[in-house]
Image (cartoon, rainbow, N blue to C red; front, side, top):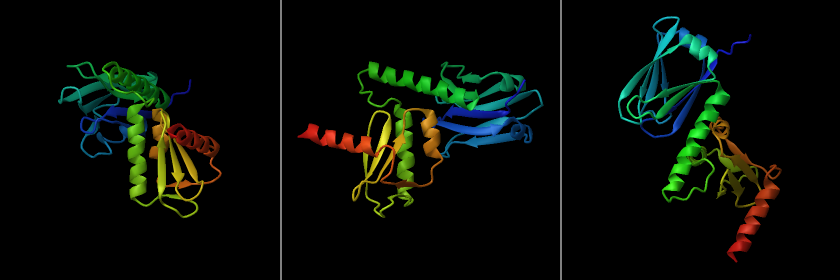
Length: 222
């Protein structure tokens, strides 16, 4: 039997409202008495306390009721369960997921899809396949652009953006340089968050589709 000691923790920040993901090993948790995981907005964090070898205490600021909750989770559950779900005891909101990377991201994708369906039910447009992932991806692209690391291989840094339901097309305003950013799942978000630089190229796999889409859009407008 192979036991995977690599864990992914995904929790909904009580300050900015987005899901934040952390990858760490059980051995790393065991090496410290307490371990802090801070959201990228720097306004909330999850703290894991290692009191003994058999269980952990996890303190989470709750987006549901505004309180800090402390959960106890056994080492055995961390090792054997594909996903451990931590819920607000007052509202029942699922606010933290711990387990394998693939299963944690699938669970959060499902949760956010339900959120989008709820928004749609109350009369809001639900254009994006995963609204939160799209917004987080756009924020990351904006940060990359602000740092001067979004440009085309031709040297131009004037980049046009086209948003579809599940992806972002970036197009050079000078040439046919294109980059396609998928933004439909938390796996896609994981990929974009690792980027420090985006360079548009004329041999992008999505260039034909992107040109076609832009052409159709202009035709429709006429």
